[in-house]
Image (cartoon, rainbow, N blue to C red; front, side):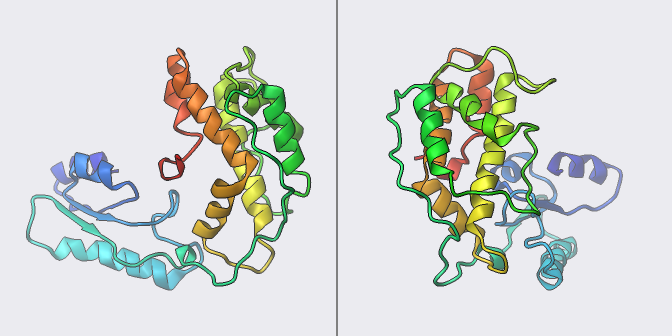
Length: 236
């Protein structure tokens, strides 16, 4: 969007860019930009919170009144309400204590550990799971193969490389855990839910191992996709 802003401005139309990744905004140097400290996919903050979203929009539009420049990059100072911790929150599910396999464990060991841990988890009726187009029972072996440095040669999903299929399965895996952690009616912060997932589950350890193994691979494609399995802020 920052690059598009330059093209639009060349045609005489003033622009304001909302951005979620500040380093990108710094490099592209759009004429006017508001960096927002929200989750990816939520440039205006929490869905359903019209008052908060209006404050974000009005702050962004206020940059049009500025006469300094040629580049204006401001930080939005208010945290999204959904990012604020809820005192006393606990996950709605108790996971069994499953040892995390060693870094050099086999794909079978990783898959078995994941299956043992996710036993109490069930999908919600309003789930976001489904992006991988794979049944839940096929996720462990697919993802674990990459963790053990032995990825499948054939993709289980038509039209996708094996690593792409594993990437989408990893997204579904994260959704399975984080959705199960939140009881109906509760509104913990997303940071609390993600802290629970990334700091203490076999599933998170598996995804970190996938990232490590893919980065160490001689396959350039695996190198490129590796960082998509674990957010930079969650890399140990």
